[in-house]
Length: 64
Image 1 (cartoon, rainbow, N blue to C red):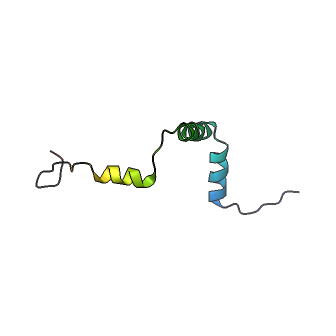
Image 2: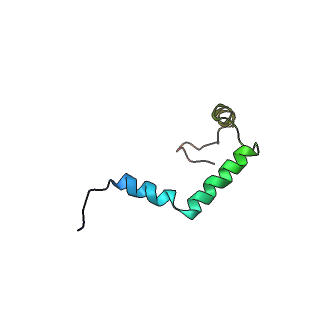
C-alpha cells in the first residue's frame, strides 16, 4: 500500500540542501574560518561598509 501525502516544497528543498555534499563542504569551510578567527561581527562589517567612499556617478546615476 502506498500513502500519498502533501510534502511542503520547503521541506524538500531543506532536505536536498541538508544532504548536498557541496553545501555541507562550504558550511564546514565557513565554520573552520570562524573557529580560526577569520570573521568579524555584523556590527563591525556594517561599520566598515558605511565608511567606504561613495562611487562617483554621472548625472544619469551610472558610475563614472
